[in-house]
Image 1 (cartoon, each protein chain N blue to C red):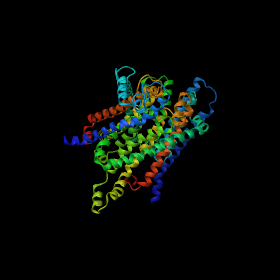
Image 2 (image 1 turned 45 degrees about the horizontal axis):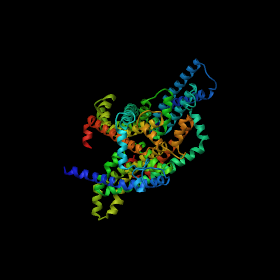
Image 3 (image 1 turned 120 degrees about the horizontal axis):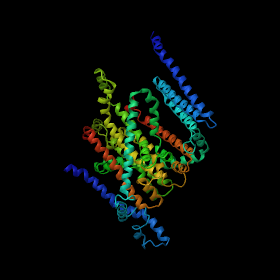
Length: 322
Length: 288
C-alpha cells in the first residue's frame, strides 16, 4: 500500500523529468550542430538567424537544467550547466566569427592543451611542486611553531597577533617583487613568497583554535593531575584541528595564487604564471586558457585532497554529522 | 589606562626587536652583493664591505637612510604623476569601484541562491570550485581582451578587481541570508509574512555581519586584482604600474617603498570597511 502511494506521487515528476531530459539533449544537439557545421562565411541575415537560434537553445538548455535540478540532488545539474555553457560559448564564438587570437573557442583550448602538454607539465612541476607545495609546507611548519609559541605566552599573543592580522590585509602582489629581487629569479624566491603569504592565516586560525579548548575539559584534565604536555596533546590539539584545516584550505588557494603572481615578476622561463603572462602578450590565448585550465584543475585537486584529509582527521567534528 | 599599557607594551617590544634585528639582517643580506660590486672594481663610493652595505645602488635590504631617502623622493610632491601617494590613490579608487561592482553582483547571485534550490544545485558547485581556481591567472588575459574592445583606462582594472572580489561576497552573503534559524522563519510564516517581508525584515538584517566579513576578504582580493591588472595591461598610473616599472629597472629601494605603500593601502581599505560597519551595524561592531 505504501509503495503504491509512493509510486503515484512519483508519476508526474517522472514525466516532467522525461521532458526536461529531452529538452537538455535537444539544446546540446542544436548547439553542437551549429558549432560544427559552420565552415564558410555567412550572410548577415543567416548570421542573425543563427544568433537567435543559439541564444534560444541556451535559454531552452538553462530552463531544462533548472527542471532537472528540481528533482536531482547530485552533481548532474552542475555538470549539465557546464556542458551547456561551454557549447553555447563555442557556438556563439563561431557564429560571430570572433578571431581565435582574441577569444579562442573551447575546442581550440582543448587542442592547445594537448599540443602544449609537455611544456605545461614542466610548468606545473615548477609552479606547483617546487614553488607552491614547498612554500606551503614551509609556511605551515613556521606558522604552526609560531602559533604554538603565541598560544603559550600571553606576551607574544599581545605582541604578534595584531601584526599578523594587519599583515593578512596586505596585498601579496606588493611583496612579491621585493622578494624576487632579493632572493633571485630561481624557484626559491617564489617558494619564499608563498611561505610568507601562508604563515599569517595559519597563525591567526591555529592560535584561535588552540585557545578555544573548553574550560570544562581543561578543568577535568587538571582534576586528573595531567601534565601540561598531556593537556596540550589530548585537549588543545584536537580542538585546534578544525581551525587548522580551515586555514589549510584557505592556504591551498593562496599558495597557488602567490606562486603565479610572483612569477609575473621574473622567472628563469618556467611556470604557469610566466606562461600565462608571456603568451597573453603574444595573443596566444588558446595556450593562456590551457594554462588557466591546468591551474584550475590543480587548485581543485589540491583543495579536495586537503578536504579529504580533513574528513579523515576530524571526521568526529559537528560539521560532518548530518 | 593600565590595560592599555598592557596591550601596547608587547606591541612596542616586538616592534623594537624588529628594528634592532633590521641592521644585522641588512648587513648579512647585503654583504655578498657589496663584496661582488667591490670585486668588479667599479667606483661605488666606498672602500670596504662594511662601508658598502649602507650605500649600494641595488641593495637586497635597503639601509634605513636609503629607505628614508627613497620614501622622501617618491612621496614629495604627493600629487605628482610619478609619486607613490598619487598612484596609491588611483589603485584605491579602482579597488573601491571594483568592490562596489562586486557587491552588487554578489548580492544578486546570493539572493538567487537563497530563493531557488534548483539554481543553487546547478550553480553553487561551480562557485565553490571557482574559489579554488587561481583567478588571478585570468587577469592578464581579461585585460588584453577588454583593451581590444576599447575598454581602457581605470575601468578594466576595476572590472578585474570586481571579478576577483565577487566570489567571497556571494559565498558570505548567501551564508548570511541563510543564517536565520528555522524558528524565526516559522514565526514569520505564522505571521503570514510574504517572501519580500521575510527578506527585508529577517534575512537582510541577519546577513549584515556576514557581508562585512566577506567585504574584508574581498577588499584584499580587489586590491590584488587591480594591482595585477595594472601590471599586465598598458597603464599610466597605479601601484601596479610602478611595481612593474621599477621591477624592470631593478630599483630595489623604490620597490621597498612601493611595498610599504601597498601595505598601507590594504590596511586603509580594511579600516574603511570597519568604519562603514560601525556606521551601518553598530550593534555588531561594539560586540566584537
